Length: 114
Length: 114
Image (cartoon, rainbow over the protein chains, first blue to last red):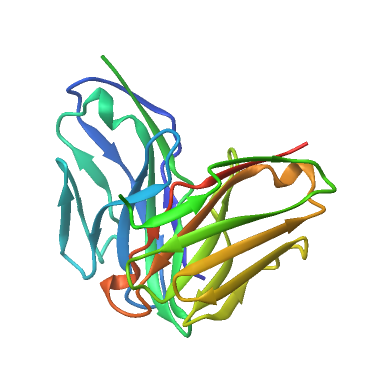
């Protein structure tokens, strides 16, 4: 079945450090891939997405590239800020009879220290 | 402004109470979802409504009862809950087709069952 595996947290970094959160997926079709972010006390919000192979999603300094050959969608940022502290969810979405089916990873908590 | 509004944001109830969670979206979407987010567990999809018809019910106990009176509103009726039902309940919406299955979340209703 379809699945998403992302690195376990928590990840603790100092401000201005580089971030990589690994995400790999298994899907029978051609999924769209997403990173969602959840700040403390809030719901999830879309951070970036890619809908086909080799697409790069980017937003707020974060990037991820849809790699079909390695079935990966790793999240990267060159210089993190304290305000990036949150939980990050990798997800895939495939069409189904009801519209779309979305599978989420377990989430990776990021702490950024000043 | 996420476009998806959930009320109440916080709810405390006893095991014999009956209460309801409400979700409203003004994005013109026609698919709506309930998710349960518990500490240290992956996001759990509970119910999906597409074009106002329930299309998925992931073996959720009958003490949770969804209602979707129109494409803009979604309710989760709660009765005879257990302490393990304490969690953050997230509502989301998406277009039935298009945007690759991107989900738009509300900020959640934090439920505590005493």
